[in-house]
Length: 114
Image 1 (cartoon, one colour):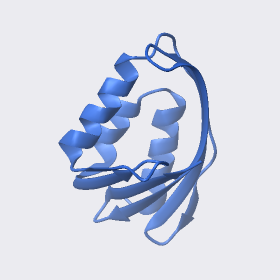
Image 2 (tube, helix red, strand yellow):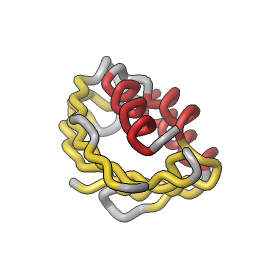
Image 3 (cartoon, helix red, strand yellow):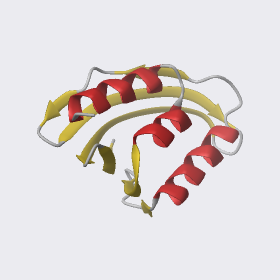
């Protein structure tokens, strides 16, 4: 898949709340996820586990808005807004810009900015 195809597929899956499916399909085995706090999660299994743990703690279906991707070379970015209730953190509104790097047809790095 090209970077644009990966970006479009990610946007589609995220808009439908299919975050785990997106990671299973699109993330590389050596993916690095950097949170807005600077905390890093390295490796597919760790990144996937983190996502599943987060989703398990949602008390309702989140409101999700995802922009169209902006693609340049091996990189793309999206803006994402989520409104949800978390079992530990309570009600939350998150607005981020996420920058992704694609290597050999898989997402290998993503960094979130708030």
